[in-house]
Image (tube, rainbow, N blue to C red; front, top):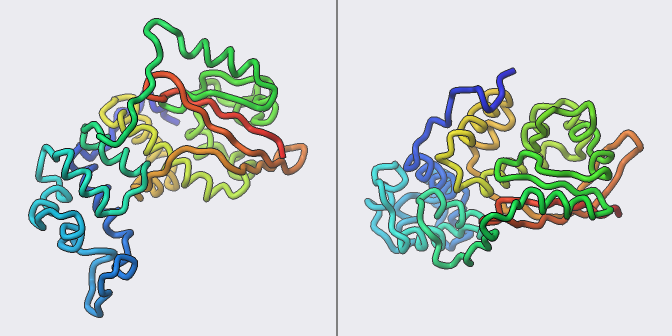
Length: 273
């Protein structure tokens, strides 16, 4: 089975095509009735029409069509802000939109930066080691940076001695058959993880390693390819997590903390319920 580091096939779509695909998916998810627009008996388009979105955003239908069709190389911050508001994008979707367009979102808070020369992976490893609940840390590509013994015991199929030599959360969830039985509501959790990964890695869309990873996982997992092509974007956050472990069902409350440059390092801790 090829690894993301050796598979030569990058994600095919360029920047403008990715932006257009995301806008089209967002447009098709909106229902006319929810926005006070008539549904119409002859409506053939899923969701809203392009001219309806253009009206909601206060831009010309031609300009919106060009953006969605990938026929423009630059979209202004003002237009992106109008698109985010008109399409009712969530904060995570808005962040992803600006990331695709390579524009700084004026509403976004300045990202906290790690002081130069400070080895954030070593600091994270020390912090994880001090925790007494299951805890682990991921880098920008969701590769494992550190974990404590409690996490190794809880996530034995992934982080135990029989797990992969180079643990990656998304690769394990989608490619290891054990994950499907071990993660309660696997289908729902897997789809959400793909949406969180899309939001988390918007700034990496031109990174060769990231593109190889996505392309390879799409080839290896039809479920991931379907989830990725859906253009869903969600913020990575905590909440209830349930696992069917060898010792029986276990429930935890997950907490996700961010650190490092632009929050690239994610520390995940799980409190037993």
